[in-house]
Length: 112
Length: 124
Image (cartoon, rainbow over all chains, first blue to last red; front, top):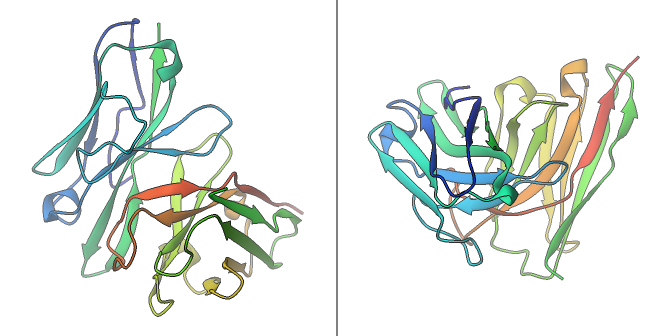
């Protein structure tokens, strides 16, 4: 994927984990927003963070997004068993070859 | 109830066509851009296509360009994905999803409402 995420991360309940999303100058580095999604097993994705660091109504403040340069991160504090899911970053890419919406490859979070 | 409901998936032979539909309800359809995103078995999310809020602008992932066509019918509050010349690599669950904000140009907007998905299996 053009947006690179670690395949997996893990943490114990109560701990803090971060998931990185690394792009380039044609997407994140070009100023396009990064959004994050949570996908629980067998369900559709759910918007978790929009516009780099904004939480939709109902999303706990344990979830925090940030962006710097050509990368973005999702931090989850106070890990809970229910956070075990796949997480995806999303942005936009525009270059001479065209424009497109991008998803990262996804990161599987395991709560130990 | 605010929701998107996809339909039209199924099992199809390589080279054949299929049309997916996405029916919206519970919110103002007009003014929102819509996307199709797919997920192959055991794989991650892959963006497929987008149609702007006014239907005038469309964009496609490279591998489907020229084979897939996205469209919308505001009177029916429905978005479509016409898929032609299907290949094995098109096997996936196809999700319909909408932009978070109204009246936005195509620019990687956040996607705040997702359907449950419809499964497309391409197999001989």
